[in-house]
Image 1 (spheres, rainbow, N blue to C red):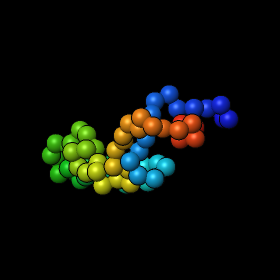
Image 2 (tube, rainbow, N blue to C red; image 1 turned 45 degrees about the vertical axis):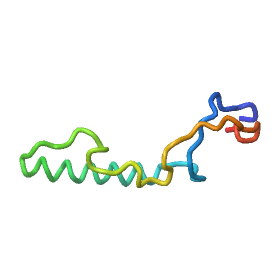
Image 3 (tube, one colour; image 1 turned 90 degrees about the vertical axis):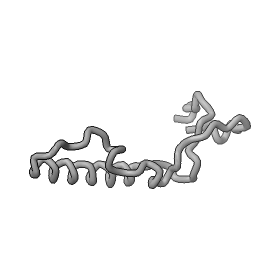
Length: 75
């Protein structure tokens, strides 16, 4: 992986490496709500975003960095 380099200069806004834990929590909540609504014979939501707030995650989105150095562009 020594030659692995990003193709675009887009980075996460915070220093968190991944949102894995957040995604797991959001999907667990989504499944729990869907199961409950199905048991009550109501219509279940289609998207995870209809139940959870995306901006509650560790990363608050992405941004483009024009002045990215070679060190930042490494994977």
